[in-house]
Image 1 (cartoon, helix red, strand yellow):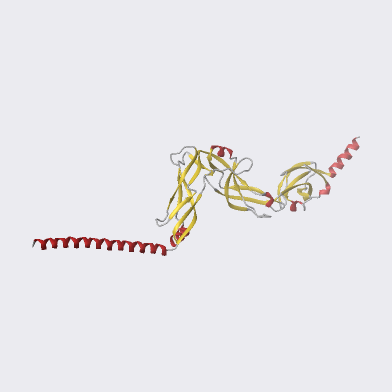
Image 2 (cartoon, rainbow, N blue to C red):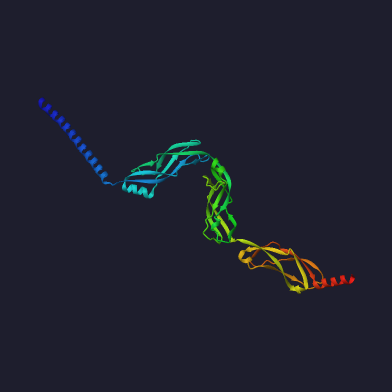
Length: 330
C-alpha cells in the first residue's frame, strides 16, 4: 500500500511539471506569433520621409529686449507612415520655438523645441540649435515722409500736394538702429505717365539719412496716402490792355502802375494769353483821375501777381486846353 501511494504522488508531481512546461511552451508560441504579426503589419504600412519648413518663435523678455539676427523659420525632418507624413505636410501643425527667458543682452545659442508633432511620427529640427542676439530695447517717435518716383509722372505734370493719415510712428529696436532712423517712408508706387490723383495704402519703412533701410520695428506698418497730381504751373508776364465799358479810350491818356502783371497757370493756358484786359468806366471823367482797379482773372489762370493796379486817366482835351492856356499866358 505504501509503495502504491508513493507512486501516485510521483505521478501527480510529474503531471504538474508537464502541465507547467506545456503552458510555458504555449505562451512562448503565442508571444512569438504576436511579435511576428506585429512586425508583419508594420512592414506592410508604407513608410515616408519629408522635410517641412515651420515658423520659429522666440520666448524672451520683450519688455526689455529685442531679437537681432534670429531666423524666422527652421526645417523639420519627419518620418513615419505615408498617411501621417502626408497629413503633416498638408496641415503643418508643427511649430518650433527657442527659449531665451532669463537671458540678458548678448549673443546666445539655444536649443530648438518642436510641438504639434504626431506621436506616431519621428521629427527633428534642422538646425537643432540657433544663435541669436538679445539687444536692449529702445524706441523713439519719427515723422512719416511720403516718397514717390517723379520720373513716373507724365510730362508737364507734378505733385502739388501730399497727405497721409499717419503723421508719425514709434520706431523700436536696438538703440543704434533707432538712432540711425532719420524718417519713416510711405512709399507710393506710381504707374508710368501718371496724370491723375493717386490714393494708396502703402507700407511704412524706416530709413536712415542716406535712404538706406534700417532694421527696426514700427508701431504702425501701413498708411493711407493721397497725391494730388496736376499740370505743372508756368508763369508769364503780360501787359494791361484798356477795355472801355463806357466812353471812348482814345479820348484819354491812360497809364497803369504796375504796367504789367505776371499770370500763373498751365503752359497750354498761358500760351493763348498775351495781354490782360482791364475794364474801365470812362464816362464823366473831365479831369486827370487816379483810381484803383481790381483785375479779373482769365479762365484757366490760377493766380495773378497783382490783384489790383493803379490807373491814371487824363482826358486828352483837358491836356490840350492846359497847353493852350499856358502858351497864351506866355
